[in-house]
Amino acid sequence: MSSFLANPQFLAILAEQKYLAVPKASTASGVWAAIAVVLMLLVSLSIGIWARRQWATFDEYMVGHRTFGPVATGAAVAAAYLSGWAYCGSAGVVYKVGWSGMWFAGVFTLVGIMPCIWFTARRTRELSATLGATTLPELIGRRFESKAVQTIVGLSMLFFLTLYSIGQLKAAGATWYVVTGFPIWICLLLAVFITWLYMMLGGYTSTQMAMAFQGAFLGAVGLVLGVWAMIKIGGPAALNAKLAAQNPALVKLIRPELPHVGKLALFSTYSGIIAAPVIFFTMAIGFPHNVSRFLGMKKLTSRDFWILCISAFCVAGIPIMIDCGWNGNLSRALFGPQLLKIKPWGADLANPMLAWGVGGIPLVSFYTAALMAAALSTLSAMVFIMSGNIVRDLIKLWWPQTSDKAAIATLRVLFAVFLLIPFVFTYLKPPPLLAIFMGFAAIGLGATYFFVTAISYYWKGATKWGVIACVVYGTIGTGYTAIQVAHKKIGMGTMEWYMLAGCAICYFVGSWITRKPSEETLAKCFPE
Image (tube, rainbow, N blue to C red):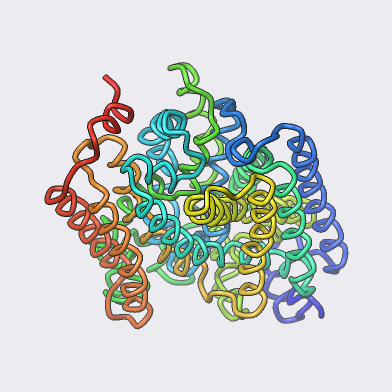
């Protein structure tokens, strides 16, 4: 199977752009990209082998020794946040609609993960250590003295994270296709196997350290790609001139001519634009795969806290705003609407094609490895949570006599199961537009767990029934409103308001009318 880059008509289009690097064959690019990916995976595997000596019990396998410092934690939480959606799919949105897509895909990534650190980092670490919790559902369950809460939260997270994980490997597969045109299962299966291996060996410790390495790497590559591409095209003025020549609407900051319902409402109405920062704020705080990165963190001093903030922002701030946002416009300026014709990848090819076009084999090789790191870092964080939810929040919760040996063995099997699910979906039926598909899960996760975790960390009046009502509404409501968006009955901005308002009503009203946790538990969770 040859790469679409070998198509003479497409190469003729590229040749018109004199500043583009056009490799004469896709074979060399595939070889070098494969080498880059394998090297990245080998470093991750080496971390897993090292981490195997860092645990002896089930609890240590789940959270390490709670000694991770602020630099590693900051890079790891940034990597968890920067999924294939952020690193690849968001540029596809901007490629398709122009600068107006930046409201969803670029501008608010400047804040990005920071609210998660500000509101949940210290409290997650403090509560998990105080209550002896090794998973987020266990922390929430013990916060409310309820096995039912722990179980329901664990099952809800399984639903959301399975949905969210399906999109991760599509991004990596799109880049692999750009580079080689070979069947994507070769690289993806290798990536899935290596990820399973280092998670199996080192548990939380290897996952955290591998994500820290992957986060630092992908942040650096995203920054280099954006800056270099902007220089190559001649700067912002030249970029806007090329966009306007294709379609003047591409340089608008809001596009009211786009449908006011359906998938593009975020870019065509003011209510959609206002919804965008709310989506980013709630999903940064509400993503369990973000918050769980603090379970194994050491107790932070004030200096440590600021180092944590700087570390995360250096990876997931300006570099990713560039990678998510203006790279989509750069790709559109260079390639026109041609990428939309390439199925099933379409606009999600924007970033990998940009790397290939302006940097040739060296840059696309690094980008391939970085995108694989972005997909795998988020995927490994979610897989660890999903597997832990079953073992810790279902099996060991209701059958506490389960031995550590049996629990760890079950975890290792579940790692493989939850890694293969997104692989199968990516191979058989990849989602059509990555950012939209992932956005459904992001809206639901953020709206639900913003209240269940962050608000519950600080509000003494929260109750288990408020949490249960919020989780049930959030889980069912996400499925229903996503279907409405898919059938163009409502827009994604409207979906955000429905989900956020509904979860808030369920959480607060449910808490106000039901009995609070015991004074003993409240004293543990809220020491004077």
